Length: 314
Image 1: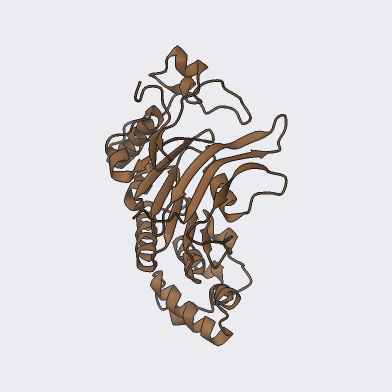
Image 2: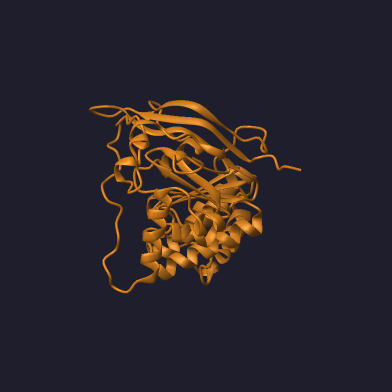
């Protein structure tokens, strides 16, 4: 029996006002996430990854023009941020109130969404701090955020995000500001927590190596369009889209080290608001043909496993 999706995006397009022309942040995006599944959304800066998270959470600005839509079939209703949706941002300090103790901030989630009393919420905050790896949580629960390191603040932000037991955790580049060792610790923490709670995870990252540590499936965005999606093990072993192959080559070079200059993808993504008749990646693709520049490739496959490239299946 096929599981009912927790999240469905169908034909989601987002246009944001800007000068001199509006920015098409997303273009006809189809995505699906099952309960308990872990999906990594990968792409360069400006590909639209963060816009996807804001659209799911209902946090796009009022002036955004949105077509298509999002549904939560397994939930059966609109999600409540904090209770049904947890959000972990790239900069944990920006999501923490510098005036309140970390225990008060975690406790607020439980009071607002679980009806806990403050004494109960404080005890739960101590437990949550311990779960995310803060040493001596009873002694640290009343400390303000500035008394913690960057990695510790990210752990606290994760504790806030999972406090109410959300069905879906949205994580926007949660490790990009951290060193390699702390990054691996945070990824392992996220992985363990979502498995333990049965929470679905949508992780935004520019790094396929990060995605490979935690994702069941990977979806690749380029210039606001989905170009490839599939099971992580298959996509990492046999990427079908030239852009995915280029990202994977960079990730492998970074992992290998050795001091050699890193290979970069030539050229640059399209300017925001640019309308290209064909494949948006064609100007940078070493395999592009005249058809690629003139005709936009159709999506081949299911939103969970497919690719948009003239070189596949032709």
